[in-house]
Length: 243
Image (tube, rainbow, N blue to C red; front, top):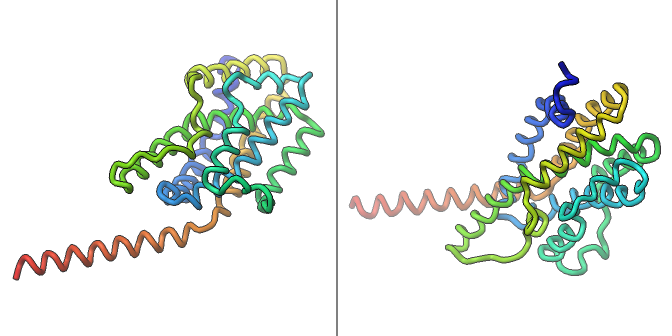
């Protein structure tokens, strides 16, 4: 029975199909960001706006259950800002304005906060759990790629947003699930159903943003050229040693 399943798990099940699509899109788009700071920084910039809005909403909605998600060590606004300064320079925000896809996302959040703020829980749950799960994997892959490309040199900085130390990632995930499940117990069936539907919208909006990440084609072209040159050199060497 649905009542016997923790609501956080119901949210995951409700988004399983679109979540898989979202993962495939993000992997395809951001695979090249593993070694390209421009693409990585653009992705950070987009999600920075969303996380910042949610964290400001937690403060504004201090008398609602949404405020309960202000867990120690979880807030990411300053970490995003630190990483953006690392990649784009200290003055990155002076002439910056959000893309249309980001603005549409923020308008949706504003409308929810105005009309039915409890639905922000869907965004908080999925985005923070995503950062604590898939975000960690992406960060580790990127760190490995940078180290490999620089022949083992250590590169420090630019990974604050996925660094939750000294807090335990497992503990933060558990707390988010518990908050979500406990709050859901206080809601009626209609609101819980709306939260499940809004959960799907989270990934639709995420996908719309990720699709607008620029420079991917340039990165693909550059990598393709590198591969072709490497193959050409290998063929030349094989020909040389066979003659």
